[in-house]
Image (cartoon, rainbow, N blue to C red; front, side):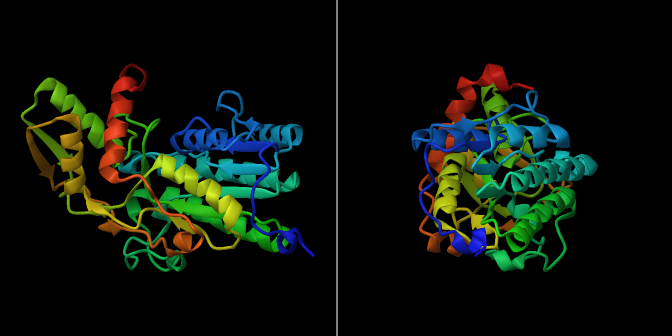
Length: 324
């Protein structure tokens, strides 16, 4: 029997080596907190200065030295619509390098359980809503982030290929838009929700009478708190085994206009909200079908307004560290 045929999902050993690639990022740090809370005693993480995941030989040496039994690949070059649209080569090349190096090194060491994290941007721009897992590769991608999406699609294919060729029970998960403590609030690289939090918090502090956002405000997006995402990751590693990627989200969405109003309320901004329709909207709607995740026994527990309130509080408490 292959390792895949022998494997049955179940509780991970809390004392075995668990490597979280990207443990300082938004998702990785939340996963690290979750694993600590769940009693894992042998967590391994390296900062980018300690281990450059684009350096193949360094990654192979790291895996040979640490020999992790479990791995979550949360490391990636990420950014919002502006960064993706401006630097497509960087997003394609660096993410492919990271994925190939980590996944190849993990295979060489026979890592038993690995979770590869992607993004809902892998799906076609005009996929039927809500988006099912089998919508993958059925249509054209959103042009503003197609390079990043192609890299993540390659990662999914890599996971499936390892399952077929080597019999390792690896899985992949595709989260919707994530937010929460540790997010990127930079002016040029942030996603829509942290960008709105920073913009409206600045406006509230400055007493601005109006704030102008990109686009029309009509696109609809789904948002998942990163602590919920971390919970889903551990749940999938212990309860799911299959070749298909699993959508991770809430199953509900809001318009960007509605989101802006929720953020404005959370930060106490009382001025006008305006829209610049000359700027791109991106994908009209991106709502994930989470029935596969629900069938595996998990659903989100943190509401959007509650999550935004706590994220605003975190942002303000860490203001001196995240300006840029």
